[in-house]
Image 1: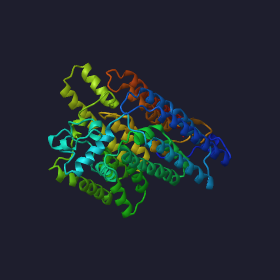
Image 2 (image 1 turned 90 degrees about the horizontal axis):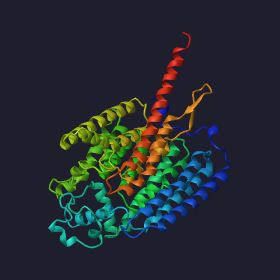
Image 3 (image 1 turned 180 degrees about the horizontal axis):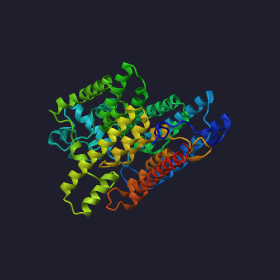
Image 4 (image 1 turned 60 degrees about the horizontal axis):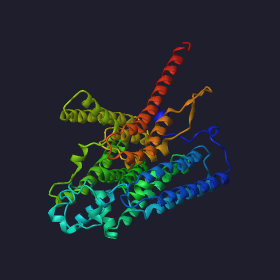
Length: 491
């Protein structure tokens, strides 16, 4: 794969974009925002009571992706704004992102009970108990039980899964308004707005159309999963985007700040620690030491409070898997069942293969990064995609992390060889596959609690696999053609 394929894409050439007057494109964005507001307002109006069957809501949620994709197509297929028009347009997009999130803030979470567990963890910590050491049903915590927080949450017989920075966010929300789910969701919405703004700044820095931030800012997936359901992944994503924003700063202060942000992202969801491969450079000791110290300092209070217990439910969680597990894990499980291999042996083989796969990908990414043949955004997508492929669960709110990097990498539909010959941009096929995966994953809610996930696999993993396979076949075919052309040249 050449550098032009795996580095950040520039804007599509003018010949591939529809030319519009600045005022007309701005007017178009305003009309599309009105369309999105109507779509999201309708979605909110059909949200059913707390924890009632939500099939109708999920169905209309999937429908709401249609106007969103129209908005994205309009931005990607028209010429970017310049000057004051660019500022006005990105201002409307960010204002729209705020309005769309505000519509959902007063809606109680109905698809997931996770946010209630966040409030419980904060309550337990404020009463001097470690959520990593004490399960909600522990007799010592019975005085803390109530019908609001304790009554609404799940997993009452296991300790918490969430790392220290996540716990700090829960504590902040609880101190502002005890047991208030809406204040917690409002805190997450503020983090989400920071993500939207920083994404726009990243696009501007790279000379891309800043309005592409719409791909994340108006997407119905984060709107529902972060603003209604209130999942902590939004905070991790904010720290990750900020990390990439500061990673281009080569000063010692910049490297320390990048390491600190990486540490905060890791202390929110753990797996961002692999992003060290993206931002680490040779002898980059300031970043590495800062990241390690941040993680140690974050865990230290809970280490003392829980008498050494700081991982809670994590070890149990990674040894489980659901019907929405990553495709690699599902294939290994299927092979184990087909060959009649003992479940314990299958589990060991899975762990061994997972380590081998993530190790090989990590070494490849690090090597390409050090050779400056792979952009940070592309490296993030490769690492995240590999991690999800071997994950025990891939819930819809997990995959929102793909969107900012798709917005930064997506390029022209066609590329030219310089001889007047055009070919499909295979990098875009990869990005469209990931974008499609983000938009289709809400169907996960139709299959939860069921034993047959075949249709889910066809619509998600098989469809994505077909697009990725097509990209690989076209890339290999083009490489062979180039080799043939070179061999046919006269000496």
